[in-house]
Image 1 (spheres, one colour):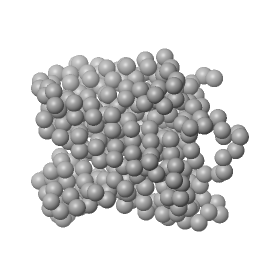
Image 2 (cartoon, helix red, strand yellow):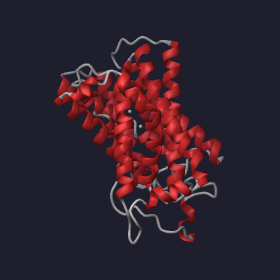
Image 3 (cartoon, one colour):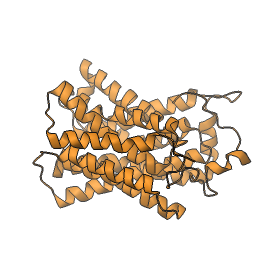
Image 4 (cartoon, one colour):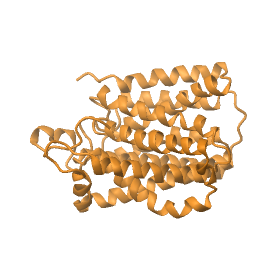
Length: 332
């Protein structure tokens, strides 16, 4: 499927900011209940989801590219971009790469970094295997549709707080719209093992989002968090690239496609995503990323000549309407 601008140096935590996170480091001002969702945080996440939605269309132009080579390339190249961005960024009087050094010195952050990196690898691997077994349509809807539910369950377990009615209704409507959009009119088979792997991918994506959200709301620099997590995830995938059918990257068009997928749709998108997580809870963030299949569907119609039936169009409208409450600020 699943980083920034402005100031990247987090000031010292103060009592005024203590309401932004709980003692455990989880967001609670907007928390799993979804109260106080700021449009400013939701918009970068929607932008990230829109970039992710372009990857399927762009990948169709990469002749001879295997799913494994695309996944490994995106994580490795995206990780390099994110690490470079974190190493070169600074805020105020801070030295370049200060966020990376603070994160590396924080022993409490290491388990979350490893969890996020493992979740990224599991997500990519499980999703592509699921797509091969049960079809792209079914794998996509199970993965993307289950992620918000898993994020809500993780939020409940970690924060002992029930999601609000606003988040629950918006998520239910968005998942329903996504199901209509992806599966409407499609004659897709359902393989039990493939569905289980797709659900595992959804769980892994929700785990990545939650781990990253905790690191950022604790005061971590978003570029440093995204760069470190992807950098760690890229290490075990480096040996995979030469054996994953990556020859397509060496062609002229392949290099351009790899550059877009790795630099823009992975590095840039996850920087936007991490930026949004500073003020948007993980539960709402995973729901907002349901915009990804909507963008993919529109591009398929406009650029690839695909056709959307009435059911799919209804799902697209329902999905768009469901995301509006999560973008608009909640009343205090």
